[in-house]
Amino acid sequence: MKILVIAAGYKPAWIYGGPTYSISALSEALVQYGMDVTVLTTNANGQHDFSYKNYTTNSIAGVNVIYCRRITGDPTSVSFTHSWALWKMIKQYDLVHINGWWNWVAIASLFICKIRHVPHVLSLRGSLSEYTFRTAHTRRIKNILHSFLFKPFLKGTFIHVTSQEEMEKCKMMIPDAKYISIPNIISMPDAQMGIKRKRDELKIIFLGRINPVKNLELLINALRRVSFTYKLTIVGDGGPEYLAHIREMISDMPGISILESRYDEEKYDLLAHSDLLVLLSHTENFGNVVIEALSQGTAVLISKNVGAADFVQQHHLGWVIQPDIESCMEALYKINIDQEELDAIRERAPGIIDKEFSPQTLVSRYLLECYKPVNPKFGQFEKVAADI
Image 1 (cartoon, rainbow, N blue to C red):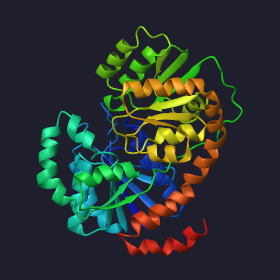
Image 2 (cartoon, rainbow, N blue to C red):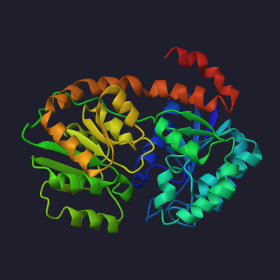
Image 3 (cartoon, one colour):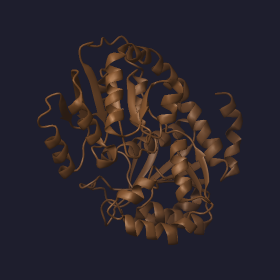
Image 4 (tube, rainbow, N blue to C red):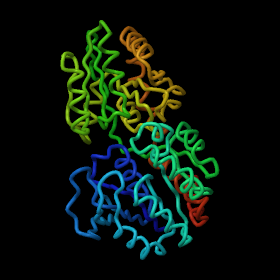
């Protein structure tokens, strides 16, 4: 089966964080399952776009990736060459999987799929949360466009979300769409076992985009008020102004340091050698880093707004709190005192993650629960999936 994946940005555009990892991991897993996968994307890479010429094609981990130049930067990513390429090639594919929203690439691609009558699925990647409409400087125009154009346009669309939390938020915005919830596929190494922990210092890590939506201020202000010894490492990249703001906040806090983004083995090594990952986002459709940390046995402290919150609570793999300073301080004190629970989570978390987030299991779910409803031909993989 031939699948066309649409995304405004793709490998090696790591600057976009979780979506780049999630989209590429799914594409590569589908290839390993025997699918013929092509990604049609742009040269987007934050403020410094890749210099690829139009229709540059690279093979990345078995996935054919076609890059088209865009004429506007983030967040709109207008690319007429992308739309023209899609128009010409779309009938070659059994299904089109569109990722994201609020950019030309996603919106134009959905429009083309509908008028060319090609089976398609839309993964919103957190772009239609209530927080998006409340806080962005473009919220007025977004509300107008959504109410009068996109809401009726998206009616009946088959939408993929990565958590029940995201589904509930999306249903408030698009009640007449069809939904399926399947977690992201995440490529993770084996857990590093036997790491010795320092009992006299709580090692905390934040890993991700340094962006206002991540609510780092809450964690910093809570740590400012605690009396125990801690070390917080903030790992990631962000806009210059916001980074300067965070650096100013922590200028008198020697227990906090900032590192640039780390990838692959280095990233997992940092997670494995931490006691606690903290993610107190205002909104987070899933939270890949939560699963990545747990795969290494590192417990998590997350806000109830993180999509993985239900999973963490169900399996007792950390602490889920209201995103306010009193709740954060209370949780931090409890974690620091009850370090035996950190040890227990370190023992059991890797096995749970390995079972629940097996790429083979999740790929079969994408084929049968996400793709088959819009193209019954994918039903041919039911027998193979049953053997997994």
